[in-house]
Image (cartoon, rainbow, N blue to C red; front, side, top):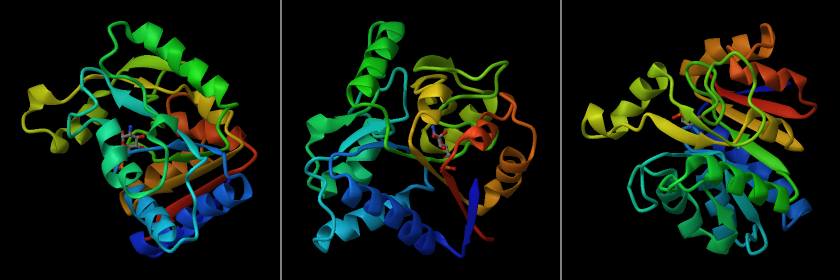
Length: 235
Ligand code: GLP
């Protein structure tokens, strides 16, 4: 794993965004794996900037998001579909029918997981996966567990995650407790992985990169991937 320490959000956006832009230019119909959270926002801002400058074309790009809350409709302001529209898709020339996010309102979450796996397979897997990391080392919504997950799954969120997400909702009862997430196996299948983390994640990033590979720290599995770049913002 390669570690790049950046000074601030702007540098994170420029460098991680630059890597993604390079991947799009090399393969204009790339399948990008995308993430939500506050850390990727400057990365998306950079992609929008490059598009506005005429340096990036999303017309053939396909995207597949890591996860979605169960129980939130696409038009809910805290849904990840809404996040992606607001922070990226509404500002670039992507064909929205080429953007995939799990359906958090699916009647049958298990069937939705299978449908999402079929989407990932149809895209030929992920070319470049952008990842954040949870305070407990989760990637996507793959929480600490006894084993690494393989494919898309419905999960119960860890208490630490529910607490961390509470800031986005009016009252505790509104915070979703379940989600659909791409599996660790799906993430590991990506050809290239770019993980972005803020200064508050320094310790967990260090454990994930340098500690034992264990499903108790899901991000530690990335040590087994050939092409991972980790960007961390210096305090
Ligand atoms: C949520 C997402 C994760 C993301 C994490 C970190 O839990 N499901 O994919 O990595 O948030 O968010 P932030 O970047 O805001 O710290």
